[in-house]
Image 1: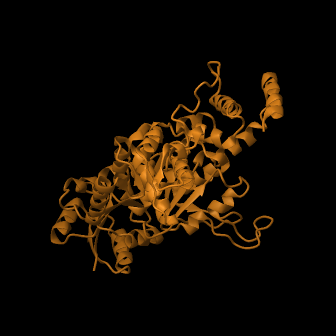
Image 2: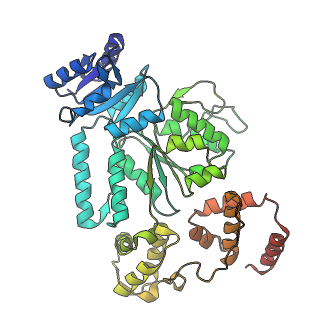
Image 3: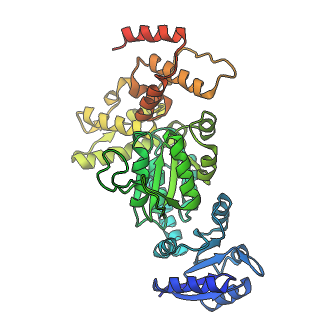
Length: 466
């Protein structure tokens, strides 16, 4: 039977929490001070410690100083209010999670149900690192380059905690794969992992999709609908392209992060949520704040543990390994094994990959189909994918100092689109954004008045584009 230790100087609160924990099949001991807690730890090693930060003989954090006593014990902090500082403090001290007084039974039950001994997590980490050295992958992530090894270290550091993660990087880098890996290594692994692309949902529907709605709350709402927060209960919610979320909805998301509650559209009843948030963007977060795409207070709340995923061009040494992996996948699926020629691999390694890993996967699939024999040679690769800078020979775009960043982004996007013959897929890949994001931006730019010179350019391109 698992054993729990509740450390809280409020005797009534400690006894009430102990009773709640006992109903979940635990034996429970209580302590009202650091001294009592150390005595209880010496008597019996607990599987989990619920630790109040404010104790009569010091801070609960002092208990972490005795690393040996807590070496194989999950620690959950108890605090009077949820805050960004609490999240950071919990992470730095090695706590797995934290609870806010008065303790919510649903959240406590969720934490107890996810109990995993630190030694188990450490063993899993060792297995993954062994696989990295043998086969070149860390779970679903492939690559042995120094930038990726840094990413793996960050994943291992944060996955065992409950803090919010903010992933940045160009489109196609694998941000969702990183988020999924964090979930798979977390204590929430047995609960859902739901990914939401905030740029792919209509602004009119996104609030209903995320928070749900009540029957009759708007035209067409003929039944109650559970949103992503309810469907991901106990698990992880991945909010991709968070900067594409409408600002009014960002306010509501901030409230969820601060209070742990939300309301369905058309309801006045608050619902407790037990979901870990991982957010991502292909924009610069600071630039997104300056251009009005992301609320600054939401950025602070999301950016508890930042992970920046490098573009594929910055880890070119990983390209052959990833290409081999994709080719093995396709060969296994199609039932006809094929392999790369050294020349083909060398050519791919020299390419800058504006579309990153997503583009590489597409090229591998195309090369597999184009290869008539079992060896994929250089001629099987598309000629458009020559190992040259994608924008080589492009005209220089002159921008006046002091131009707002939103206007700079607009000019660069439209100029790139024109230079690439209004080919939207190539434009999205070159700019490092998803095709959906590009369409959203072009729709937004259509409402911005154009200068006379831009109008002339558009009229000309309209008569010459395919």
